[in-house]
Length: 113
Image (tube, rainbow, N blue to C red):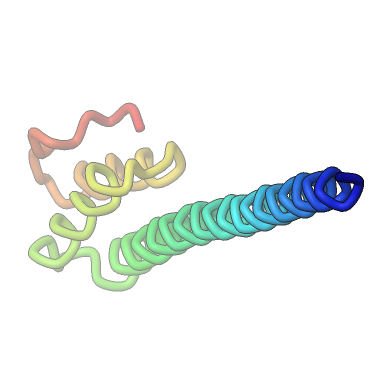
């Protein structure tokens, strides 16, 4: 009888150990997954910021190097101000460029970025 009780207790202890192992393993996987998601979100934000910086720099340079090429500047300005939600500094630069080139303000340009 003692052997049966000892066997049952051993089985229960082994079951608890196995369940603990499974829970720990799941928690470790969840922690790794959460970390990967966080890194992925940070990378996405960095890529968006790099795209915004790149488009802003291109727009700035194009307005100053080749101010008469409206066919190139306007689509780039649209991408920068509308698609990438550009910043205040280039807003005033773009307004000045529009005035200097006698170009009407595009309907998509709010001038308040």
